[in-house]
Length: 100
Image: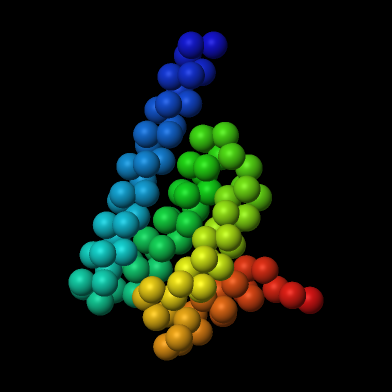
Protein backbone atom coordinates (compact mmCIF):
# COMPACT_ATOMS: atom_id res chain seq x y z
CA UNK A 1 0.00 0.00 0.00
CA UNK A 2 2.77 2.44 0.93
CA UNK A 3 4.50 1.77 -2.41
CA UNK A 4 1.28 2.70 -4.25
CA UNK A 5 1.07 5.99 -2.35
CA UNK A 6 4.68 6.83 -3.21
CA UNK A 7 4.10 5.91 -6.86
CA UNK A 8 0.99 8.07 -6.88
CA UNK A 9 2.86 11.04 -5.43
CA UNK A 10 5.67 10.54 -7.92
CA UNK A 11 3.18 10.54 -10.80
CA UNK A 12 1.60 13.76 -9.48
CA UNK A 13 5.01 15.43 -9.25
CA UNK A 14 5.94 14.29 -12.76
CA UNK A 15 2.67 15.67 -14.15
CA UNK A 16 3.29 19.01 -12.44
CA UNK A 17 6.77 19.14 -13.99
CA UNK A 18 5.24 18.29 -17.39
CA UNK A 19 2.80 21.18 -16.98
CA UNK A 20 5.69 23.57 -16.37
CA UNK A 21 7.55 22.16 -19.36
CA UNK A 22 4.45 22.60 -21.52
CA UNK A 23 4.10 26.21 -20.41
CA UNK A 24 7.77 26.76 -21.26
CA UNK A 25 7.18 25.23 -24.70
CA UNK A 26 4.33 27.68 -25.34
CA UNK A 27 6.54 30.56 -24.20
CA UNK A 28 9.51 29.41 -26.27
CA UNK A 29 7.31 28.84 -29.31
CA UNK A 30 5.85 32.32 -28.95
CA UNK A 31 9.27 33.92 -28.72
CA UNK A 32 10.72 31.92 -31.62
CA UNK A 33 7.60 32.11 -33.78
CA UNK A 34 7.25 28.33 -33.91
CA UNK A 35 3.61 27.37 -34.41
CA UNK A 36 4.48 23.70 -33.84
CA UNK A 37 5.97 24.43 -30.42
CA UNK A 38 3.08 26.67 -29.44
CA UNK A 39 0.37 24.16 -30.38
CA UNK A 40 2.31 21.22 -28.90
CA UNK A 41 2.73 23.10 -25.62
CA UNK A 42 -0.94 24.06 -25.54
CA UNK A 43 -2.01 20.47 -26.24
CA UNK A 44 0.32 19.25 -23.50
CA UNK A 45 -1.14 21.78 -21.05
CA UNK A 46 -4.66 20.55 -21.71
CA UNK A 47 -3.76 16.85 -21.63
CA UNK A 48 -1.54 17.07 -18.55
CA UNK A 49 -4.25 19.06 -16.74
CA UNK A 50 -6.75 16.25 -17.28
CA UNK A 51 -4.25 13.61 -16.19
CA UNK A 52 -3.26 15.58 -13.10
CA UNK A 53 -6.92 16.06 -12.17
CA UNK A 54 -7.39 12.28 -12.41
CA UNK A 55 -4.33 11.57 -10.26
CA UNK A 56 -5.62 14.06 -7.68
CA UNK A 57 -8.87 12.12 -7.49
CA UNK A 58 -11.16 14.20 -9.68
CA UNK A 59 -13.30 12.89 -12.52
CA UNK A 60 -12.69 14.35 -15.96
CA UNK A 61 -16.31 15.48 -15.99
CA UNK A 62 -15.78 17.49 -12.81
CA UNK A 63 -12.89 19.29 -14.46
CA UNK A 64 -15.07 19.91 -17.52
CA UNK A 65 -17.85 21.37 -15.38
CA UNK A 66 -15.43 23.63 -13.52
CA UNK A 67 -13.87 24.75 -16.80
CA UNK A 68 -17.27 25.73 -18.19
CA UNK A 69 -18.13 27.50 -14.96
CA UNK A 70 -14.84 29.43 -14.98
CA UNK A 71 -15.24 30.38 -18.63
CA UNK A 72 -18.77 31.68 -17.95
CA UNK A 73 -17.32 33.76 -15.12
CA UNK A 74 -14.59 35.13 -17.38
CA UNK A 75 -17.20 35.94 -20.01
CA UNK A 76 -19.29 37.84 -17.48
CA UNK A 77 -16.41 39.92 -16.14
CA UNK A 78 -14.52 40.09 -19.47
CA UNK A 79 -11.52 41.63 -17.68
CA UNK A 80 -9.24 40.85 -20.64
CA UNK A 81 -11.76 42.10 -23.22
CA UNK A 82 -11.58 38.75 -25.01
CA UNK A 83 -15.33 38.64 -25.37
CA UNK A 84 -15.93 42.27 -26.21
CA UNK A 85 -13.20 42.48 -28.85
CA UNK A 86 -13.27 39.02 -30.43
CA UNK A 87 -16.07 36.93 -28.91
CA UNK A 88 -13.50 34.31 -27.89
CA UNK A 89 -15.29 33.17 -24.75
CA UNK A 90 -18.66 32.66 -26.46
CA UNK A 91 -16.94 30.81 -29.27
CA UNK A 92 -15.08 28.52 -26.84
CA UNK A 93 -18.16 27.89 -24.73
CA UNK A 94 -20.23 26.99 -27.80
CA UNK A 95 -17.45 24.65 -28.93
CA UNK A 96 -17.11 22.92 -25.56
CA UNK A 97 -20.83 22.74 -24.78
CA UNK A 98 -22.81 23.06 -28.03
CA UNK A 99 -26.50 23.67 -27.66
CA UNK A 100 -28.01 21.20 -30.13
